[in-house]
Length: 95
Image 1: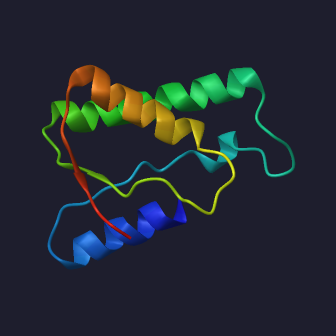
Image 2: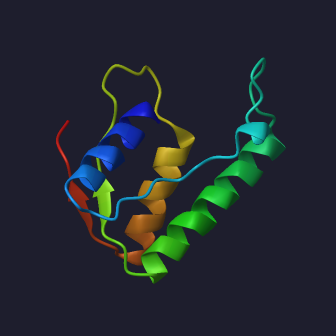
């Protein structure tokens, strides 16, 4: 998520009305993994936010995957799937 925030702030500095999904930290346990139910709820909130931005006509920037991570974020995968299902274009930004 750090790379997402950094990229959004960089875009903002260029005058772009860039936003990023602010996950509810209270729903991300600090000392354990999320339960399957917690993950489903968190992903549903993320999907609602993304769909709102799509419906408002926001330009979606994709910074791609983090090659240093052993596993992909289920949130990134959800976002990619949502965008593909809706046929919504993205703009790729190389980091």
